[in-house]
Length: 285
Ligand SMILES: [Mn+2]
Image (cartoon, rainbow, N blue to C red; front, top):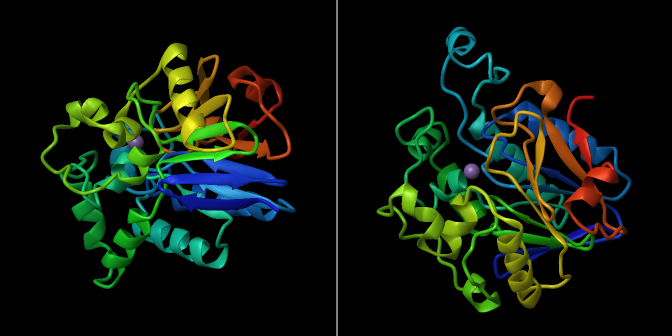
């Protein structure tokens, strides 16, 4: 049975069964509901989100048409409802659903302020929550893993794999708070947490180094990494032989939105193998 076990900031995803993966929802409730619908079609499925669950557009549909319609489809920011739905999934499907922490999620639990549609995205979202929901949000986010490994031999990160050495003890000791003063441009090389949440790309050499550090820290050892954090307007990008960028939701037009479906009983050999085995699928076929 597909299962997700989280320990010391690493999620271990075991088969047999199916793993569905989506990146960067950024407050898009409809896309989250679509992933749940797909999960419900699986006989034995688990769901992994790659982080940045929250913080969506604050402009009206009319403003969107002028400013962004050439880039992406309009959706309203439903970050509060995305949180409520995600929290419900965690409770009702324990061990079958999780998310990695994204840099936007980190802003609620000690990360630097992020600004996209608001000067302070985390503060704006927390204004839309009831008072008792804010500590709940912080509890949920504080417990999220930073890396996932799977029986498919595919690993997952929010941003690209960082060129920063790490081991199991370093990951286990990561504290989320204390980053409010770190400039955003320095986050990706500040430490392992900053690197995992902010790195913008990785060469094959760096990806392989990351995979060997990860293999020493967690089992099973993995052959490829899939990450989010970036907008790829075609839905995914084979960045190098062992690295794929996945774009499921934010900044996308519906026909290009892409999710990942892995058979946890299959070993995927590298990034190209994920493509040729048709693991990358349209969210709205
Ligand atoms: Mn991100």
